[in-house]
Image (cartoon, rainbow, N blue to C red):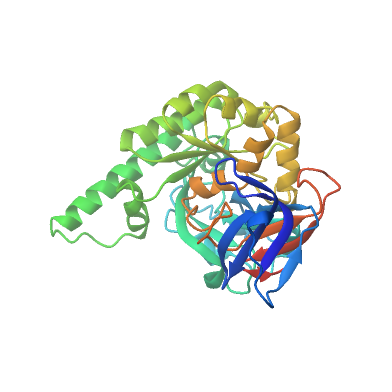
Length: 380
């Protein structure tokens, strides 16, 4: 199949074809280029974009979609295993519901991939997965699982365990839980490698690829002191860190850039509900990007419905984020942060045919998607 006569944003560098085409076969992109270079193929199915925008499907790098299913009032009970501050052994895919009605709504808005994550009540929440938003069985929707270990600092954790008079009830306690878990995992692995055969431990097994530097950590942190604590712990153990939310990122941006820490910024389209988020602002993504931090934008679905990811990007542009940087923040940047950019995040030969065709610029509020393809299958 070939999509023709579109303004094709490949998100490969600054490459734009206007007018351009995208050709794909068997779920993979085989060619992208200018219309002048298109060689017609007899009998080939064609979709005329009619001057609309052709983009890689959008990606949100931090959501709870499919876990916090729409219309379920007790969603928090399904996203947080609030029984221990270390539940690293949990896997998001084991709580994912493919028939969540929010998935179709997100897809219609051009969102084709989401990272699904356990919640933020624990210092270690569990394993994050990247899934495509089309399918009936999670195994068939997975791009990569796990992509990262979910962790959290700050009030979410301490207010979960503080009332129980249980560690961690302070910010110091949260950091201590993290350090102890990493140190005990290293000791566990050392004993295994030396033939001492320690008793099998699910948490240590889940944390093993983290301390071996094979799996990044994504840490929930709003306040600047919590961001710096996340950076300090990551530095001590040599871990690849992405900060989720980064509400005070304006304060920490230069240091994050210097230490190559990435950020998934947001959600910003709601009113502050706690002191940690008092500095919520759509100006934060621009300030962080200008400081040199690689950013992605997030709705934190179900905090903000995932279908409004392009709206959040548009509002960030209004508050100073360069338009192309905003497009990157919902396409190639989250793909790179999640290490799935070999498959999604841009339009290039060999990548999955996850494509959104819009009748106008995707950041214009009146724009609608004309067609959505996931792995080459039209699903909207």
